[in-house]
Image (cartoon, rainbow over the protein chains, first blue to last red):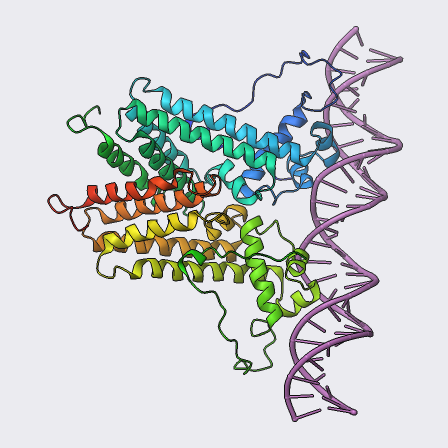
Length: 232
Length: 232
DNA sequence: TATCGATGTTACCGACCGGTAACATACCTT
DNA sequence: AAGGTATGTTACCGGTCGGTAACATCGATA
């Protein structure tokens, strides 16, 4: 019924969603049994609504009926576009991951040759997002908190994502010439995820998340070879 | 059916649960309408099972039928001890908070006059818990991730708990004479919660959580007045 | 032995869940 | 105007959910 008011998690950085034309030429051969190739306005609307609702109320907290209704459609149209709720959830997580990396890359792209500034920019961008009212931390991480360990597909997806985060932070720590780069990268990850986690509870930036950036700087300083702390 | 195999989150530190005698004298006047005064073996068994299940599979992921069955009882006996599932959930969160502070106090008690060592001991204890197979991070925080914001009672409870954590860390940072004690305390909280959050995904201590303690030390050093970094 | 409280058992309720069938409409294309 | 495609509508299914009623059983106590 009521319009969604969709505020995207990465709106703050201008990362575009999947609004690409979906031009009506059918590149997928028409006889695909599964639905994933389906292109339609309803499908897009439903998917966006689902993403929004999942993020705001949790995956278990939203039923397909509610999703379809909030998208101004109905359950039957939902099942014409998605084989099951679980398939939708998987797609939701994948989309979140896609948007996350787009956001990450955008934040980092401004300082191609300065890994230290890249890391700082990352935490600046995180803080910027945290200032949004609709921010509820990390979508993938929250999903991990509510799905049980034995839901293999989902938790594998989330695990792979988190491992990517870790790998990238390791790489950046190494690139800036840090002693004990792995340890620094891990510490950065703790600060990052700590920010997401606490943002779930504390409104806007009133929580400890504001302390992330100074801590990041101090930690990097502590891991840089004596004598060259400059670079910024 | 199968026995629970209850491994408590704070078993690692020897913090006892609510095993106190529950001596059969009824201090509560018998005509209390609500159940909370009820004392019985079944109730305790059900409650412990519920705590275990909630922690392992999430609150939405466990029904009262499953709880009662796993406790070797049945739904009817459940509702003789708890007014509703929601009431049980509230009690679960309260219990988790109680156990958490007991754990915290135990970790900190060994160094009554050394706030820096206290903080370090806290993170050591966290790492010790993270080594347990059954560890799934912070029970209260996970609950926050799966309940929607409009569940007032629960989220208020979690918020109060997190604010307590923050307050205590601020106090400790201040007590150790840190410059910018609030910022240091917040950074410590980010590391702490980051550890809980990542522990959800990474098995045992293979995740970034091992980097928490060194980072804590480096951050404290950076916040201590020049000249006196000793103390350990 | 009689009684009473705590517990187990069965059956049930209404609500909601994920998912489907059958049919009606509206629109776009030719 | 004709046909097809996308969408809406209604009704339904089996299962599970939180929650309750009625009755049976067991054990301690008096």
